[in-house]
Amino acid sequence: YFVGYLFGKLFPVGQLVKCPITVDWTNVQEADEAKSCYNPVRAILEKADEFVDLNALFDVQVMDIERSVGGDNSPVHMTLLKKKASSDAATTKNNDDSKAPLILYMHGGGFTVRGGKGALAAQIFGSLHQIGEKDEDDDVNDSANSFMDDAVWAMVDYRLAPEHQYPSATEDCLLALNHLVNDMNLGRGGIHIYGVSAGATLAMEVTLKSMDMNIDSFYVDEPKVPLPSKDGTTWSLDSGSLRRYSYSRMPPVDWLEWSLKAYTGMETNYEVESTLPYGMITTDVDITGGSIDAANWKRSFDESNATQLPRLFLVTANGDPLKDGGVYFKHIYEEVIKQVEAETPNSTERQPQIKYVETTSGHTGHYIFELPLFEDTMKEWYAEMKRSHIRKLNIGL
Image 1: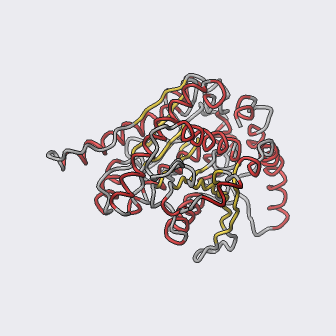
Image 2: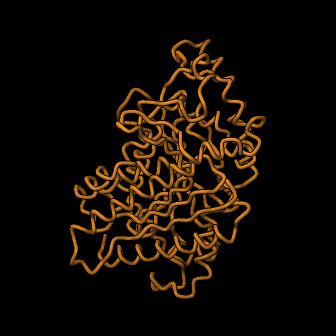
Image 3: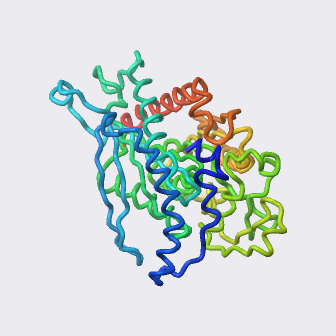
């Protein structure tokens, strides 16, 4: 994933900018030609992910969720991970997945490829389990087992653009979360959302539109956030960080703009775009689904039965063209916290404050080059999961 960004002009995501965006998918020949352009790049990234054997690390369950509405008959594919149980644990432990934390994970890849899906999942989920094994004060289950032992990590293979444009990916993630919570009865020990890059943008919108589920935290790692125009009718990637880091190639800016067009259904106009500086392509589709508007968060919170806002864990990176979009969202969520607290001035319980982390190694680079920072952030997220787990079990949610 990181290597793909690092060498974006040559390998592999940079190659997608040559591919068509607006395609007549009912025309078999045209569709096949388009897919022959996308699929080799997607195959390279998914092949690289195979170096991590999830079945060797976790108990793995795969499932398909059928759609009840909409014209697309394809199911949503999802992979569930749990800590691998030893033979002794399997016979002595009383598993209750419903009372364990549920973590919904959305991979990155600009909404157009599956970037680092299994590798990052293994690193993040594995880190949480390692922290749990070292937690000497973990008696929340009144047993020798960590509360994380039964945690469920759910990865969603949401539909990709350009074949499926906004809001297809959001719809798939919302359907997956609804199935996990309402049909499988998971998440009574805490519901947490995690997304990386484009997946972080999805994490923002999914959390906003799922407040009635009492989401406990959402981890937004280097999101792709187009910023609004002054009149709020168009959005673009133009920002100080994009102009400052556009030649860092992490990720390649021409691919960032191509994937924005792919996700919003914009045709490429080579004659016009060749004269534009980076970031000047605008779209009339808000791919954040309204999550960069404080009023939407306040309304969603007021309409839910939640007493607390979900705690935001936010990561941005120096050297990342997308950094300013993440910082913009930080200011939005700070305003949401301020508004909610203003309505309950006498409350003894403050709203959860933002955990903001600024890395120095470019887009997604901290997973490789800043491991101590990554591990410290995982420890704080683990502590937040533990707090919410105790709170929900105590109130019987």
